[in-house]
Length: 593
Image 1: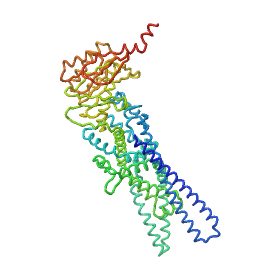
Image 2: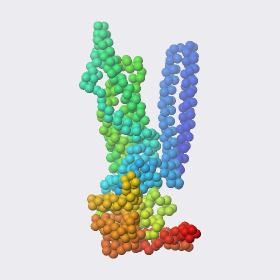
Image 3: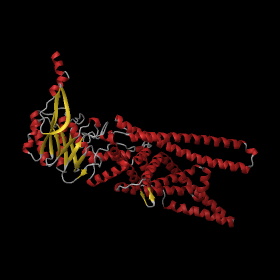
Image 4: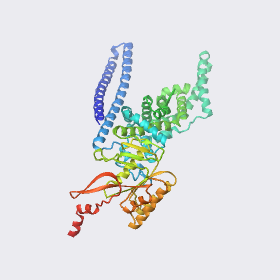
């Protein structure tokens, strides 16, 4: 926490210095402009050589100062973003204010676990983790949270995140640049559409691009010795002007499109340059870096080259210059061809390069999570059917209120969890699920130690009915259970069930729950079922090597319910519904009536 306060102080001082330097530059620009105006006023009294020498000098200095002014403004914007980043992190740690978007667009009630475990939406896991300023990073983080990774990718991510967690300046500097993106999703699509636009150069125009300028140059050279060749140079000049006329509208359209995407290209270029310049020790980070930078190639330089091409192309706005240069050597047409050559070379690379930015933003979000929670562990990944957690809790619960529990799904792979209302059963299930989701993307988890075999996660904790589809809450739950059983038949999974079959009578619910548990055991699944039905706990006698009973205790102290949220071996006999209703005055109200 102190690091963020320190950085806020440092960046505010830098911001103050930049503003002072910017004021000096503005004052110098005004002084230069005033001096130039005075010089023009004194034109009559100065010699022409002195006048033009001074004017040239002032213009050169003015251009130099203008460039300094632009750099200072960019640095000022970055510094302001850095102040904002650190302030948001400080507010997040002290007041639990979430600094970035919550990923509500990825809420999917039909997903195997994201809806039940609150992975997306307000105050969700995504909301807690997200430090992506680009839609590329957000999509990547959302995709990882929704599907997880394979064992090798998990361990690669763990190593990359551990290195990035120590590179706070790199992470924040990259974020400060991507924060400048505006209307990114629309502009990014426009960038892809623009890059995929095909060339207008056929064989004839390619031939004329070189023949006509060559004809003009040769005829001009020949006319030095014989003026009769002058008419040939005039014909070549006219042909070149007609070619310019044909390409004028397409060139203007390209320039107009570039103006709409130039900002996003500049920010992507700067972001790629930051990654290219950073030194990494981790294998995955260096592999990502190699995708955008090799011996004589770099993605940022390619984008800079594109900017230079358009800068040269914009010279067509100077009509007199355009006529001279294009009438003689088709200058802007050749630049236009270079543009399509750039597209042809890099059209497949643009998504590839920008995906690297998205991957770094995703990894930086998890590295920030690791940095803010140094007590969290990176779980050991295994392939020997072992899942265990030591002092595990839910990462979204405030540190002061967080209670850790230890559980081992060996030798029994499935747990029947009992406990009174509000004793902590549902929170414990969600803690298991959320930490497994984090483990599957290579993130640290909220535990002292963990040993995990990555597997599919299947959850039934929260179902919704649908008037449009004509589905009741009970029927929706039955469909979810059917989906879970189907998935268990195809891949090894971890199942979380919370008080299933609530929409039917007690006997029906009891028999149905027993059948579901037996099916899960037959399919060799791991997991946990929370229930109030103590009859279900009797199944552990029938399946002692597969089922274990655990519970959360509830006590009444001074006529008040007390919960310690500690997981215990055995079965809960605690009841608190009547006590809770009495404490809220429900029965006394009924008596009054």
